[in-house]
Image (tube, rainbow, N blue to C red; front, side):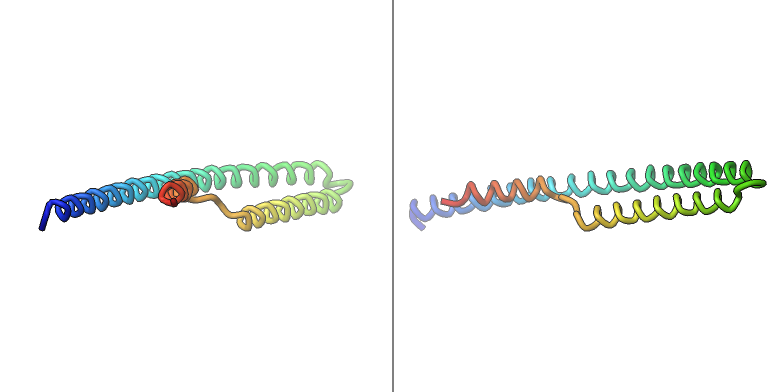
Amino acid sequence: MGPAGQRLSGSLRGLAGTLLELAQVRLELFSVEAQEEVLRVAGLVAYGAIALVCLALGLCFVAMLVTVALWDTHRLLALAVFAGVFLVAGLLAAWQARSRVLRGSRLFSASIDELRQDREALEP
């Protein structure tokens, strides 16, 4: 193998090394984004569950308080109003949850943007 072949071989090895290094960096970014998303979702679920339980208990106690206060005069009206309020609140929450699920998320958006920039940089 002559000097030109050795230079070509060295260049190809350097290119392969650079491509492997670039792939490694992109995979590390992908991994970091996945870990961040897992932590974000876990925190969201934990705080959401705590908030849901506390709000549900609070609303139930308010409903019982008003119903007991109006027991002699308008107990059925009080029960009907609170049943309606709870049903409407539940339907609104379900509608919001559905719209958020349908909207999706931008998981790994930074990785996708970096790969797009890499592709654009390699285009002639």
